[in-house]
Image (tube, rainbow, N blue to C red):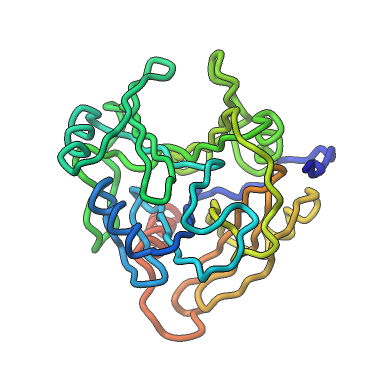
Length: 299
């Protein structure tokens, strides 16, 4: 299925002041998958109970595991692998990471790409995780009130999209993410930046899928944090994007969901300050920390 890309020339829409907010994965049992990601990979659980668990990917990025209610999915069935998207984590000491995984009874396939050693493993749903040796990465900040990552992990480095046409997707996302796409030597890969030291990498090998009919049918989603949802939505309106669901107003956030030319769901997300919450509750740790950093930056 081929979806149009606008040929209109325009300046990139600046969506990613604080970059990637959430990687969403739907699953048959969020509690079971959260236990695996926490116990095996080592991602701290920030909060959660069925049907939703939130785990720290390092700094202010979050992995959201959401239990599916059994609805059919345009991008696959809950509990099945999602080959079009996977998470890449940095390791400050890959030997130690491999040892830690082995101690938990998990086999990680070791290999090398472009001179970097990597370990690949799969969660119980078949979702792929690449852990890359990067001893030069600085230790990530952790959220106040949240346990830090294991000492050998440096947090999320990238979302990797296996796709049919990396050039086409780099062109699509390059209209609102920056910098311009760059190629990795002899790999056919393309790369963009979300804006918070997290990359979006396109590599050959995926398939085109129909877009989800509604956000609840998306098997996975990349959610980008924006300062002003309505302004970002209006700026995107002229880019011929496929809309999955827009103007989703929650008690503490506003979101709009889109599908890229190969059917992957992504979204923009504004988190409201507590004074705009519809019902009184405590602000999420990652939202509070982003707001604190913004205030410090403006000061």
